[in-house]
Amino acid sequence: MRILKWLFIVLIVVVGAFSAYAVLFDQTYLFKAAYYNFSAIDDYTIFENNKVAKAKEDKPWPLATAYNKNAYPDSLNNLLEDLSTVGVLMIKNDSILFEKYWEGYSDSSLSGSFSVAKSITSILIGAAIKEGKIKSVEQRVGDFIPAFAVGDKAEVKIKHLLTMSSGTNWNESYWNPLAVTAEAYYGADLMKTATDVKMVDQPGSLHKYKSGDTQLLGLILEKVTGKKLSEYAAEKLWQPLGASNDALWSTDGPNGNTKAFCCFNTNTRDFARIGKFMLDSGKINGVSVIDSAYWKQSITACNIKDAKGLACNYYGYQWWLDPQHPEIFYARGILGQYIIAIPSKKIIIVRLAHKASKERVETVPREVRALINWGLNS
Image (cartoon, rainbow, N blue to C red; front, side):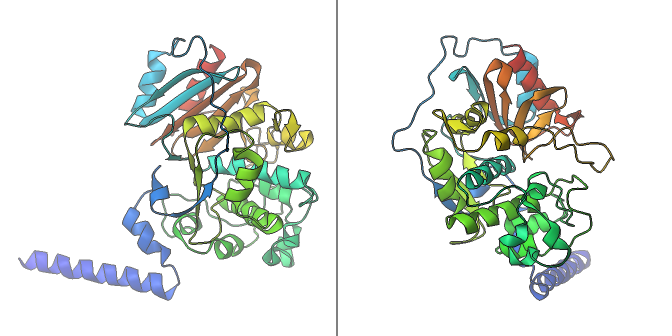
């Protein structure tokens, strides 16, 4: 009984200290982070969300003649099941060739995509440039965000954010509740979180993955368009692409800033529309939403030195690339969410899941490599 009493006292002290720290240092997001512990694909249920309105007249994907009859390797199925996949979809020549779902998910089930949202945000930056709301990728971030108009931050340009080479000290740690990424995810003031960074490198000199760079892009978009990202995404993408379902884009609170770095929620079939948009060179029904040069740069390696001292051959403007097949590009979320485009095959593959492999093959996650091989052989 005495041991239990002391354990109880220790627990009370720890909880009290944790609570005091969170309140005194204005880190109250820690309560939410501690309660939910780890991020999950249904986190849209714990956040405020803005609706990305579907098309008034949707454009359902047709089923291919060989629908669900193509070779689907047992080894791929086993890998996907081991990594808790909830949905996989392959579209070829604008028709659904294969799809499969697990755990009660379906072709219309909402699922979080985490950093897949970064690629969508990049597209919207391209749309804003084409509209003239942003002059070019060379425009300085300080023209839109006052915190970046003075000092070393004044050298940061939009292209630096797009290529993850801003030079800020954003700490991209997903397992440390005290890291800024957790604060951005669970917190209630994305403007403060994204702008309260310091410069540690010359902009454009080092590629280092940072969600904060994408969040700054989102803040810029909401300022120059005068719209929430959800509204702008609906106007420029979701409705023209014929999305069948409303999507949700999570925010930092009621009428707050959109979480541009993550948290776009929809289903496999509608996610595939983003892949089609990129396969179609940034056009919808033959009409350019983004300029061809911006589209090309989005899926071209930035070649900026990375932390290993090597030229980055795997990242463009918020799109990942396959160094083994430079034409192939993909959007990627931390728990294994992917939109993969294989232009030579006119194939789009979408995978949604609870887990991602930690194994990499030339920066490409093991399951992405397997999905690419499946596509190339289809």
